[in-house]
Image (cartoon, rainbow, N blue to C red; front, side, top):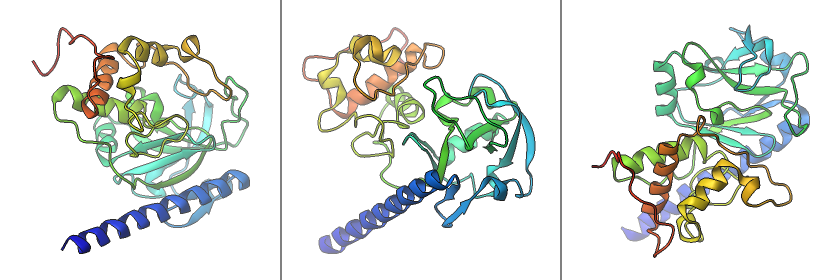
Length: 278
């Protein structure tokens, strides 16, 4: 029985690795060719292809999330594949937004729906001068303003099934809130104990949990303004303001990380005055 279970695990890992490798290969090819890779079906769609998809329309995307313009062509994600399943959205710079079925359902309850924006006239560039096209994941509807910034993805090159191991389970209300905040705001760039697709930053759970080599104050400083703490070549991390990531969510993320590897005498933080566990 143990050999059978081990064999299943090996096969499962091989399947996940193959899907991930296919996704990376398609994403690299998509970036070079200026097409959007739909990994699940093996399709690569150009801007011209997307403009002929049923449901295409024009939308005002001049808001603060991406600021792409007032008259942008968009096509519903649902016209390309099922947004009810977990999906991974990969950008050209390796930023990855993993959105599970629960997150899609939560957005839908607020009236926010996912769309793919198509660059038909040049979009404004990023602050560092990088191109933001030719595709982007955007949100439209009454609740769009409430969708976390990390789930708006410009320079989009590939959409793939959300495979691989899930983030470690949280055991308390406080750490569950931290897990949700980590998934929305940290996982696009960071893995956690190997879970996730983020590749821009280090894994925050291994080989050593971040709470073992950082204090909470140091962690908060890095999140708020990373360049004020440390600078390095090729640094891409942008700071999160309290409006984008409230202090309560930041503390919950720290609690979640600490619950996975309790710090040994350092990195501890005082319990918040209004902990949901008390």
